[in-house]
Image (cartoon, rainbow, N blue to C red; front, side, top):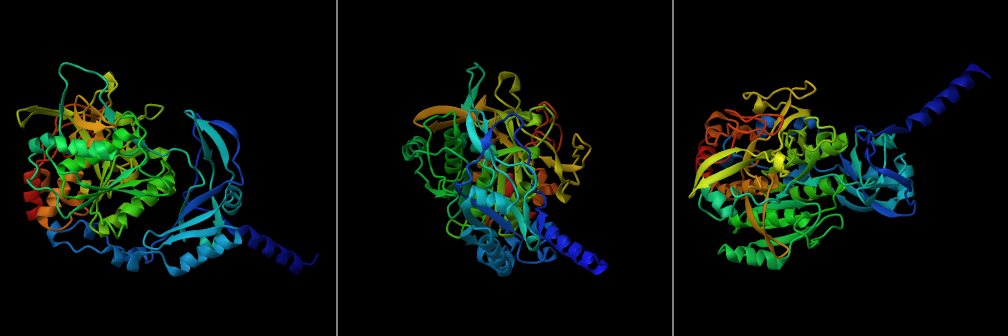
Length: 536
């Protein structure tokens, strides 16, 4: 064979090999305790979310310093329409996805340029072939899931265009961070959200003109529960709307121990603190695809236009694929440019976050540098005033403890350079969690109504909506969304407004003066925080 012909063959072979490349950060491992059932049904129809890059060069996107600078009242945020025009998906990228879909027997179901999202439909078999993977069924904790492992493959021309592909795998991704009281100790107390707000000196207003988004990955609420609950507080029932994402809906299970406990806790706390605000509850499946689609839908919702998002679901950092973590983090960064504050519960299983080997780890997405991570305390009142407060830790009583620690993924952000964030267990200099805290111990929990039953619930998933209600009040009084607050919270004249929690631990870290990996900067003094934000 001639040298020329050999070179030609090598060139053709090289071209074929280069026609498909691994999708960066898409590697996925199997659930360690799951049992293989067999291949997934290749004929099953599913929908997959394809997330594409921003529509401008990364250098043009606002820096973190720009996002967090100045008093909230002085900031100029992008409208959702301006963001879509400037940073939404490029027409050429969407066209490339359409071509890819056609070549692989897939259909384009929906295009959301602002969300940088293309929803594709097709069979499991077609998707498996298109993305170079195999889907199998596994049983896990009494349920069956479609799972994949390894890297996904994409056409070479889509390298750098696609940032993530979600939906091929539908295993559960996150847990609700609420804890229902299970014991009845003589020293236990419980409060209404209004009582806690009074103790934390929240400014007196009702959040009118504001909109709060709540993300839920299961369960639902009953209208009669909300009506009865707010009537008992002497409040009108807030305007609450259920928003369906990826086919999920408001679907109460009938059990306060299930996700209904999370859903009604979130709504009742936000609604009690900010009854004048509109509340949108975004229901999505409990998968990485559902979580991502719920968040991006809320961030870019041009109907409700929330300026605050409360998230009470999450999981250990290492339980997420890199593409899922990066996509959620990017969505929170997008939110910051539009003046949307994202609040996330830091977890209810102490410093290990419930990891199977007991290793210290933080919960995600509370470890994203673009969210306010919310930890938990045990609050004791005398009358309407704080008598004592310490880091929540009831692990010995099987009632959880505040999450907190140091990220092994996200580097220490600039706003935490002035506090003593310890190294992560692997030595990484990471982002410290949480940023703030609030009452969360079931032993000093919240009186709520779930599925017709009065009960007491705690957890850091109570801290996040409590902070959401506070910011709704603050936004109303400032006249502008607080937006990306993290750099301001850590500034000297704002940090001193917190109730510094200096006692307690989370079985990995101890509370102490200043910021700590149990309760962050501390719990709020609402009136002082409002004054500091106006003058910061």
